[in-house]
Image (tube, rainbow, N blue to C red; front, side):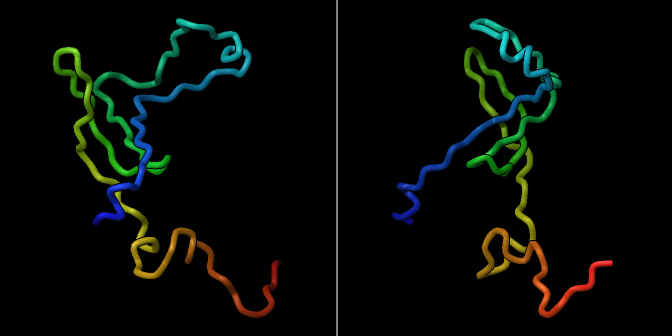
Length: 101
């Protein structure tokens, strides 16, 4: 457990997403407002090192904003297999020639 105490994880909470043309993004300045494609009741996505790990809801208490975790996102079955690292097993490796028709 002592090894894990110094492990740093970058946590992000995605409140919403928006699509816009690049020319609009380049025109934005300080104080610009980006409208999100979500509402205050939508679920937020919680990322650890840019990988989704959970979903939750925003909770506002006084002047504090927090996230209540409502759902954990499980890893794919191949990743949870002991001795298999991320990416292993994603593509089956074939022995011998392959006919592409």
